[in-house]
Length: 377
Image (cartoon, rainbow, N blue to C red):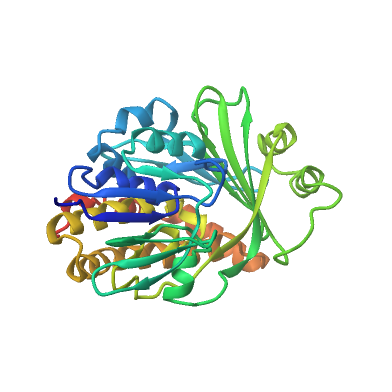
């Protein structure tokens, strides 16, 4: 009796679930292992740009996503006191949308055909001649034909494969929240002050996602409380920033981190995807989008070459340049946006004001118009 090859996915987040949607259940037995008690996603708003919507469209989820999202048709860049620096009208084959991260995760979870295992964390592996021995945190072991490390920024699989230590802190912490408001429908903006930044995106039905960054030591404590700290830090910023912070019930804080992007995403029958392979700062909003792009790229390579070294090598050859561009561009943009020197800020602001709109559109096109489906696998 012939058995279907087993594919184990470490991590039940956006990358792992997206990959599972592309793997034919008639050909492969796909199992997803998640360390948390339930399959869920924490966080606030997430941008799903056209490059990622094309991925979701190819597995038939476009309409499911659009009904729980808000569209951005244009976005403004501002100074802390509300002066306009740039206004961008987006043009693309797919809409520019934002949604609650949990809604995206729920949609992916609802459609996967993989077998799901909660509270079952993969912590290591051993490549053998024809399979992979997989080690779990509860002391058990199992075997598979291919192991996917989709276990995020602090990936145990990456730690064993690349062992490059902790993520790199980029000088700021970031706070995120979702708030209900009567503010203008579809409003989106990014605002820059002296080192501090705030972004706002529309979600749906009067809900908005926002994020704020403040330069500080990585483990700085929020005193007296997170809410009071942020209200004080942004009290004199333009509307609706103080209102949104004031009215947000639950605020999430994270360090703004990434990793130096390096080659070597596979080891024998083990391969990395998503944040386990190429974590990025959130300055371009492309982290989740790249996770979906990488998942589709890997799936297409497996479809063509089977479970093989050729498939894993081809995936990295195709996806690495794209990931490197996003990771490095995001880091550069973050540094530009977080300037604190007054002279440098003035020069930056003048540059943005005089930059022709077609140049900005060309830059956005390089991110938004990328299509995994057009790659020569």
